[in-house]
Image 1 (cartoon, one colour):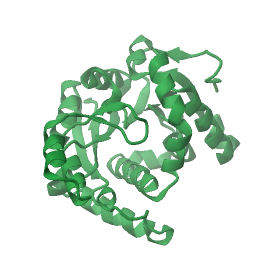
Image 2 (cartoon, one colour):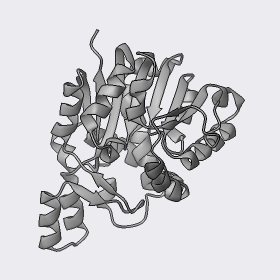
Image 3 (cartoon, one colour):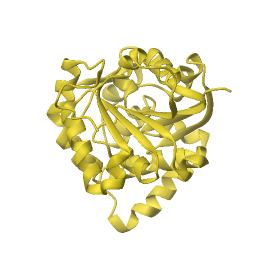
Image 4 (cartoon, helix red, strand yellow):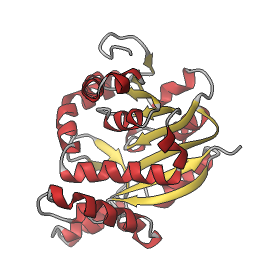
Length: 276
């Protein structure tokens, strides 16, 4: 297990990007512990488990590219997989290691860490992973197709990639439901880049068809395209009560499978396979 603050084991780390994520890593981690943040994570993991049933059995090698504070990496390690958590933010990785330690020695032993970016994967050794995960990452990279190609190159034949991005089509619906005026709604229909609420930076949002095309251009075959957060982010009130979260998760999963709801989902998940 590498020390992310030591400068060792870097894979294309970008100091400017690291600083942006470092500044708000703790706030981001708090969000992931709240109702909507938890629902988002649980929905994406549930979709992956449903699409790749072998994931339930343990023993895979998994790359979590853009691992953030490591909550997904820990969940995958609990399932018995060896997970490499890659992120440009040393602070994110410090928090990730803390979550792993809290989960116990067996979980911690199956996790390794590297401070770096997806682009840096091109300098790594050839295909070695069964699954590569990049959730909420492509919005921030300059070339999403190149990023997905790098992920695909890291996969063994028959391996899977799971991508989650913000859905550009959902933003106008969300603004209108929150009472924004027609000028703001119209502008959100025409823009592609938006300032993020949490980090204060900018991200590029994509449509479901665009996300699917990134996988296709990387030589991958889409096996599932799901909506994540169909209803949760349309609600302006408090987070769901803890006792209602399981029911809301099932509602979100059911809606996320319906193609007609893709446009209104806050996020899109594309799970694709590297052909044999």
